[in-house]
Image (tube, rainbow, N blue to C red; front, side, top):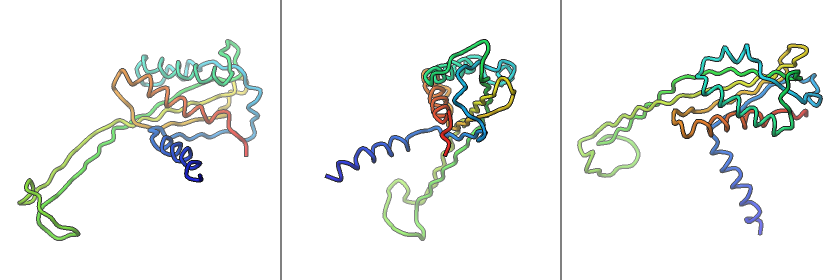
Length: 179
């Protein structure tokens, strides 16, 4: 009977470990987040972000969806200003496999590597970081920052999904739970 109770917990851990986005957040512990009900995008900051306009729109659309799901409303006179910042870097992975005669643990015969052999594979991927800053519109002070890191895709069919995953996981940490 106990094993049946552990299966949902195990499945939840497996699903959580499959996530390809790692998130962090930081916030001003002296701020009460309850009064913030409206938001707008901080256009001067967003205009400086060095990504394609298409990806910017994808990010802003995903942020709109998440903020509205949290009960916040877009406004001309907002409580919060939303700003974004991005970084990316190329990740190079080199894997080398050597086989053949020699010392080491285990032994056996491989007809394809009878005289020894090396195989090297090189793959590249782009790792991106998305920062979402929430700024108190009246005080002009950042009160919360979320950061998501993960592998990016160039596949146009998967971009919307990947960006939505980044934004969803970042904003899942807003508003912060005070301990």
